[in-house]
Image (cartoon, rainbow, N blue to C red; front, side):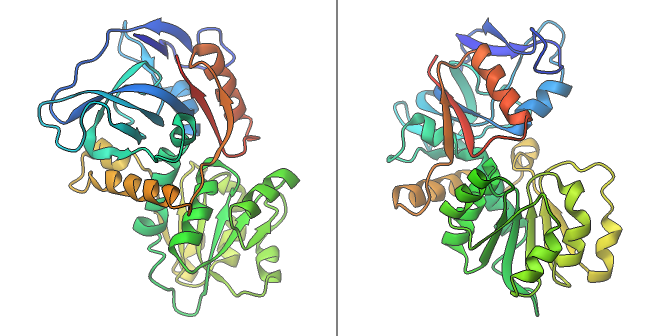
Length: 337
C-alpha cells in the first residue's frame, strides 16, 4: 500500500523529511478495524513527532493523527463497526499514523463520520474536537461555576485548529461568554464567524483588553499556543480559584505565579487515554459521535480551510511547513491517494 514516512527525524526542509513509500497492508486483530483512508488532516503534533522521534532501525515512521475513511475489515472482537461503515478518528500516538492507504485503529476511539460532510471536511475534526471537548469538560470542568468569577472563557489562539472548534463547542454546549484571541484581520473575522462573543488581539497585552470588556475576571482560560508569551497576563486576568488549561509545551513554565490566586492548572493531551488504555478509553468514541450529531444537526461546522490532493510526500511537506509557520487558519486536509 502507498504511505508517507521517514527514517530520520529532522526539519521539514530536509529532502528525506517525508518520502513516498510502499508498506504491507496491515491485518486487523482484536478490537482493531482496518480503515481505507480517504482524507487526513495535519496537526502541530505531526511536526513535533517528525522533528524528534526515530523509528526502530530499518523501519519507517508514519505520521498522521486525523483521518476519515471507510471500514475495510474488522478484527474478531469488533462489535461497533462493520465493513462499509464511514468513520473518522484521531488514532493513537504510540501506533503508526494514518498517512497510508490502509490504517489500523482501535474501534473504541472511532466515531461515525458526519453524514453531512465529505471526507476532507470530516478529517479536519477528530483530533481538535477531542482536544477541545476534553479540555472544556474533563479538565476545566466548565459546567461547574467558579465563585465570584465571570461566567466566561478566554480561548487563546482562537483561529487555530483547536481554538476554532473549542469556540463552537463552548457556544453550543455551555452558557459561557466566549472570548477568543486572534491577531490578524482575517483570523479575527474567522473567530467571529465561529461564534466568539468578543475577539482580542494576542499580539497586545491581554489583561488590559479583558479588563476593558467590563465582564469581570473570567473563570476559565484555555491556551492553545504560545502560552509562554501570555503567562503573566493570564495570572493577572484570571479569577481567583479559576481554572487554566494548556495544550502546548511552554519552556520554563512557572506554575508558582498562579499560587496566590489558587488557580488550578490542567494539561490536556487527547492521546493520554489511548497511550495508557485508560478504563474510559471508549469515551473518545462517544465524544466523536456527539460531535458528528452536532455537525449533522447544523450546530457545529467543519474547520477545514485548505484542501490538498493527493496524499503524498510533496503535499504533506507543504502542509507541515504551513503549520510550522504559525500562519495557518483552521485546518489543512489532504485527500485521496
